[in-house]
Length: 142
Image 1 (tube, helix red, strand yellow):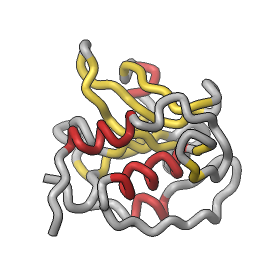
Image 2 (spheres, rainbow, N blue to C red):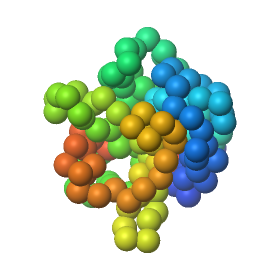
Image 3 (cartoon, rainbow, N blue to C red):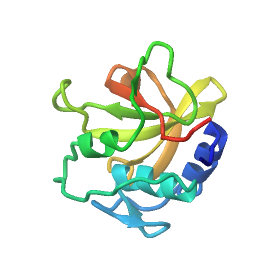
């Protein structure tokens, strides 16, 4: 089994920075949504992942999350390379996903954000932290 490091995941995720937002997009440098960002990052790291594109404009990434390793304890597993899910409308359901990255002030977040219109990376500030639904690891990560 191929073992991927968290920093390899971050490097793969950063390759898509500035890719335009496109609902259900799956094309590098052409268009991605938040789930597409996770799928392309996994594939760039040779991590097998099933891509189910049956979701609305407000995605509910439960099916994507099922492809990841077990849900982690977010009090101890908020670490670089892990996938974090957020809620916006309903705190009992995830509606957005991103990847945790190293940031000079602690943790960062890389994700395709429709509000920015593209893949961005920024500090994981309190506004984002309070919307965390859960944290997962990609399968096969060291």
